[in-house]
Length: 420
Ligand code: HSE
Image (tube, rainbow, N blue to C red; front, side, top):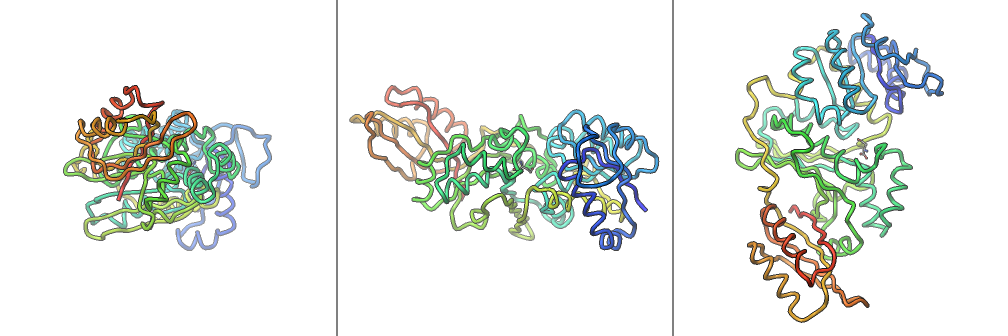
C-alpha cells in the first residue's frame, strides 16, 4: 500500500480522494499497489467537504508523517507551497503538484532540490490533457520546432462567446467565473499570466529554457472589441489567446497574446472552455492534444496519473533534461520576435490622414498587407484597420509610439498579432 497526503482539499483534492476510492480497483491494477489518502490538510476544518478523509489544519502532519510516501500539493499560491514542498523533499517524500504558478517561478530550484526524488506536475498545464507526459516521454526523440496552445479555458470561453454570439466582455467574464474555471483573481486569466505560467513549464521540457514570467511577452484579451471580431471574420481569422514557443535558430520565442489565426486551422476550431496544444517535432511532425484544461475530475485525473507513475517507479529528470545536457537554446529577447500584426486606430477623418499613417508605418520599414476603413462616426472619427507583413516587434513598438504621437490620432492603438 502507498499512503499519500494532500495539501489543500478543494475541488481538485476532493476529486483526487473520490477517484482513488471509486476507481480504486483499476488504479491498483495499473500501479501495482493500493493508493490510499492518509490525510488531507485544509485551512478551515469546520467547512463541509464532499469526501470523508482524515483532515488536519497543520501541513506538518503530512510532511513529517513517516508513513506518507507522496505529498500532493493542491493549495495554490507560490511561496507558501514552495516552502512546504521543499520540506517534503527534504524528508525524502515524492511530490505531485498541480500548481503552475509555483513552477513558473521555482521549477529549476525544485528540480535541483528533488534530485532523484520523483517530482511530477502533469496537472499544472492544460489540466486533464497529458501534454507534459507527451513532451517529457512521448516526443523525447524529437527536436521541438514549436508549441502553440490554447492554455486558458476562461479566455477561450470568453472569446468563443464574443465571436459566435457577439457577447459583451464584462458579462461574459462573469459567466466564465460562474463556470468555476477562472482564477481567484481573473486578471490572471484575461491578462495572459495563467497561460504564461503553463507555457514556461512546457518551454522547460521542450527547450530547457529557464525563464520567469517577467522575462517573456505576455498580453491578454482585455482590449479586444467587436470591431476586431468583425475584422477577423471578414478576413477569415479566428481570435485565440495563444501560448507560443518557437525555435528560431539558437533562440526560442516565448509569448502569450491574443492572436488572429486562420479559421481553417485545427486550433481555431477549439471552442469554449476546452484547451488544446499543438506540438511540432522535427521527426514526428505536427501532433495535437485536446481536452479539458480545468475542473475537479479532469485535473485529478492528471494528478492520479502522476501518483501511479511514481508508484510504478517511472523516473527521469523532473524537467526532461539530464543536468548539464540541456539543449543550449536561449530565450530570444521579446524585441526580436518577428510576426505579422493587426492594428486598429481611430483617426480624425481629414484629407491626407491615411497617407500620414501609411508613411509613418513605412518609415519603420513596416509593409501593409491589408486595410479597411470603417465609416466615419458622428464625431468625425474614422476607424482604420490594418494587417502588416512580417515585422520585428521592436519596429512595431516604435511605430505605434510614433503614430500615437500624431495629432490626427484619437486615443491609443489596439494591436494583435497574426500567426499563419
Ligand atoms: N483559470 C484556468 C483556466 C484554470 O481558465 O484555464 C486552469 O488552470
